[in-house]
Amino acid sequence: MMKALWALTIFLVLLCSFSSSSLACVGKTLEIGTTGTVQQELLANIISELISERTGTTVKVVPFKSSDEAHAALLKADIDMYVEYTGVGQVSILKAQPLADAAELFKAVKQRYNQELNLIWLKPFGFDAAASLGVTLPAEAAPVVRKDTLKKFPALARLINKLGGKIDQQTIALLEKEATAGSPKQVAHGFLKNNRLI
Amino acid sequence: MKKLVPVLLLLVSCAPLRPLVMSDRVISDQQIWQNEVRISGVVRVTRQGRLTILPGTKVVFERIDRDGDGIGDAELRIEGELVARGTREQPILLTSAAADPQPGDWKFLYFDYARKAELEYLISEYAYSGVQVHFCRAQIAFSEFRYNIDGVRFSTANIRLTDSYLHHNRHGIRYEERGGKGGVRHNRISDNQIGIFAVTRGVGRTLFELNDIVDNRPYQVKMGLQQPTALDFPRNWWGDVRGLSAETVFDQRQDRALGRVTGSNPLQQPVAAIRWMKESDR
Image: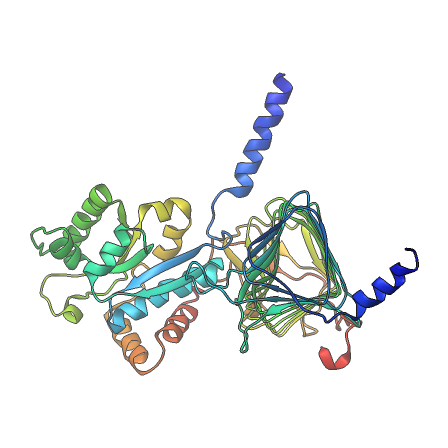
């Protein structure tokens, strides 16, 4: 009886280890939202290409008209992630007071999104997005991902965080210019290739 | 009565060849497919089922996208037995019904814990995966996988892939070893974006040797995000007498968390794989 139980236990452990989720699951498509600007298209495509190239997982970029729409879709699990700005998150989504310090702001939105919304802010890309948003409030752009997506794909955070701090002010301006003239997907691919990320 | 049998057989053989059409269907008995079969859903051969596909059969998958993910959802899923043996003159063709076919028009031929998986002289094209093999043994020989996202994909499988031609796919071969083992020999893997994509948990139990692995751009071999173990692909022809070029590999040199890819004892000339195929078709 004990032997049979041990055999069953070992079988179940092996089965679980074989079928545990990784990024390279069969047939799962990840969906990334964008909110209608060239910068958004570009950043979504950078994430999409990175995931697709490094894991083989199919990634779909889904357009929205605004941050509010994308945020609502994220909460409903219609999408897995989108790129948000810390200032927008703090003021428009969380309805909180603006914060002048960029690091404090990131810490504040990260904490409240995690605790109240089950959403995770990953590392900011590295450029100050305030100018492009036309606001004075400090704004960093960073991927916001559903917590259950990260649970399903444990390697996803580590992968996307490779983009953290990789895009400075000069780089985003150049990439946006190229994406305006051509294809955001191709520009994203070229950026990742040049940085040896794919 | 006995005299009637040949007459009936003759009549059957002369009957107009209408394609067999099916949407979602479960096959739990023994079936034989021939001529043309059109599929517009999920056809599943259960553990008790056995499907034989005869030489010259054309299996055509309609482009349907039920979940809106941009990938066709028509598929042939085998949990029981599939024996699909074409011949050199009459290969079996799995293809898209679209007038302008594209990779991913249909999902895949999928072996899942299958009892038997035998493919010979089979062409699979315009699928998400030309074939996927999971948690079972599979023998694939003298076959062609082209214009798919993944040509041949397997995970936790004991696979024997020989004498086949994998070309113009996004990934020629995509695999997650995960304790599986097998041999990939005498194949030509060419003109894919990635020749071999070792996604995760490979430790070298699947031996890739004596293949022609050429002109896959940008990478002949690429490691996935979770492949920390070094992998060797010995005794292959890489299209150059100097062997596998570091420029055509994605491994530890790009990401320190990954293992290293090597191609030990590279061949100095092509294996001349797929000699069975007509020169004009190579």
